[in-house]
Amino acid sequence: MAVFIGLLVAAGFGSGDFLGGLASRRARMISVLALAQVVAVLGAIVFALVFGGSPTGRQLAFGAFAGALNVVALGALYQGLALGRMGVVAPITAVVASCIPVIWGLATGERPSAVALAGVACAIVAGGMIAREHDAATGGGRRALVLALGAGLLFGWSFVLYAESREGSGFWPVLTGRAAAVVLVLFVVVLTRATLHLPSPESWMAVGAGAVDVGATVLLLVAVRRGLESLVAPVAALGPAFTVACAWAVLREPVAKLQLAGLLLALVGLVLIAAG
Image (cartoon, rainbow, N blue to C red; front, side):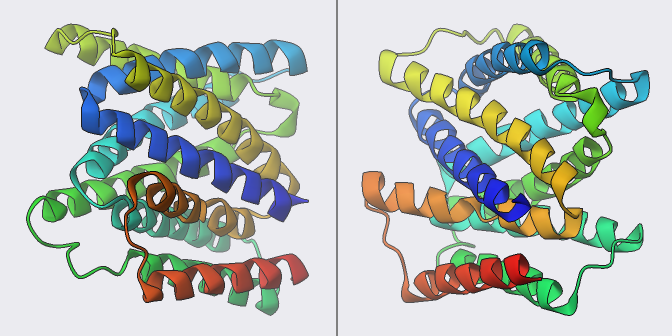
């Protein structure tokens, strides 16, 4: 079940990243991010109220810190996707993000089977194969690469913090996370005198990005609570496969043979993780 939910998380994050990155190519990134986070916090309110829970102050604080890291990571990712090739930036971010929870899980005593660990290794290697492109370190791609690495680090640690919340807390940590994110983003909006008003196509992209992002975050918490962090993280980190697919279908970004091989290896990794 954790693997299946992890796949849904990957689909949500992958498609949301595509929408946010595409909107940031056509409009100001902070405006796109602000509108997306407003939508996300509204969705988080609904989830928290519907499913209830009894969170402690510690769990709410973990959620708030996770949300703050997450929104900074999203800003870096959106900017990276706007500057570079989506088929390169998204996978690099995911590979870095997936490594941190795996290492954290192992360091804190999780002991998945050898088969499952082999699947984890396949998923991480697959992300690297998807990211291999000859123009990734040229021109604007260099800045996009730095942004991708930074976003990956922040996403990884936000995952660890979200994982510290327990099932009894419901989805209130998601709400405090989104609330912290909105406060940070609106502060930057005021500071830079940006606007929440966007042209119609970009505004709908931002709304879509925020909606699928909060949905994926909720599912991520469900997955973490049902399976080991070191198994769920690499599955959820396969979101770039969906970003690459969207970029190919909408923007006609070419998909190299090595990337296709990476996608196939990712599927093998999923099978191994599920079997383990």
